[in-house]
Image (cartoon, rainbow, N blue to C red; front, side, top):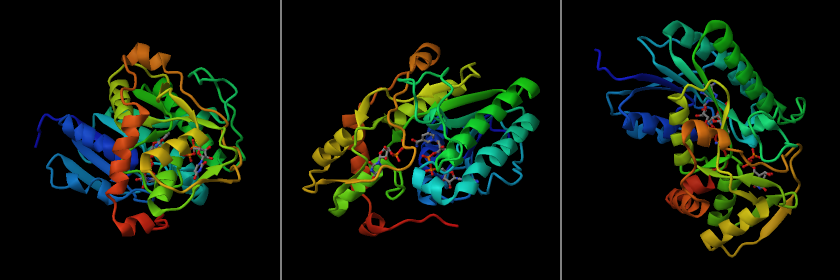
Amino acid sequence: MNTGRKRILITGAAGFLGSHLCDRFIKDDYHVIAMDNLITGRLKNIEHLFRLENFEFYHHDVCKFIHVPGNLDYILHFASPASPIDYLKIPIQTLKVGSLGIHNCLGLARVKHARVLIASTSEIYGDPTVHPQTEDYWGNVNPVGPRGVYDEAKRFQEAITMAYHTFHGVETRIVRIFNTYGPRMRLNDGRVLPAFIGQALRGEDLTVFGDGSQTRSFCYVDDLVEGIVRLLHSNCADPVNIGNPDEITISQFAEEIIKLTGTTQKVIYKDLPVDDPKQRQPDITKARKLLDWEPKIDRAEGLKRTYAYFKSLTKEELYQSDHIDF
Ligand code: NAD
Ligand code: UDP
């Protein structure tokens, strides 16, 4: 049946960002084909969409040949472990999804004449020596360090995407995503925001790694999704940073979470993980100019919304240790 709807394949659809992208494209009246192997994602994030006639879910590992019947207009490749503890636990899968997985998506795009947008990351800049990070900075990555499995997979992913664009004429878009937060992050994925809020809710001390002077710049998920939609519909094949330039140290961030949650717990200090970047802040001049995009939701508002989500979790979810499914 031809409904006239645009058809979009979203890989990593049951994850944090993928599920928000599914919501956005359903809202915009697309036919959404969601694909995930559920290694770090959860069906709960998308189960509210199952009853819709313009939503389909494929339980599939994108490292294996991808077969999607019918035409496709767009492919968003978001499948990949994304938190440092996840990709340290499943390093080979991380390398595979960033190489074999994107290769399958690009091959599919070529056959279907679809436009592909890939989720790249600020991690391709590694521990940056240029600050804030502009898209023309090539980065400072340790390929054989523990984070190398993620950073190099994402760098390869950019390279093969650009090669398919240049040599096969596939329409491609590359978004370099900086730390993004919001509802549906997994409480125990080890990223700093769910870690701190989970600790506050369970009455535990907040664990700051290192001396807490390292910085990050946190973007609320709705702002990121808007930036991705604009990039997808733009004509820019070069990478574009999407993030919120409001930079903060991790110590200050812990204090903000303490204030937000009203916890009486304190901050404790633990060892800084190997190769943990010392500073990170996106330069979003390009996104402002090409996409007329900038973040609209400040951290106070974004944290309020995110905290409301975490507070609504059941006690069982709050105390669940980890659920990476091997
Ligand atoms: P997430 O772990 O919540 O989601 C990733 C999803 O991909 C999960 O549902 C997982 O099950 C799925 N997946 C992993 N390997 C797969 C495979 N081989 N086949 C099919 N599905 C697979 O992480 P997220 O935060 O939503 O990140 C999504 C994407 O955005 C990732 O590519 C990540 O690298 C990128 N990104 C995220 C951030 C951020 O701050 N959240 C920052 C930079 C880049
Ligand atoms: N971090 C921390 N305590 C935690 C988890 C993380 O101090 O319980 C720090 C981590 O070392 C890093 C920053 O918070 O400096 C952001 O970590 P996250 O894993 O969220 O993202 P990434 O390092 O990939 O930016």
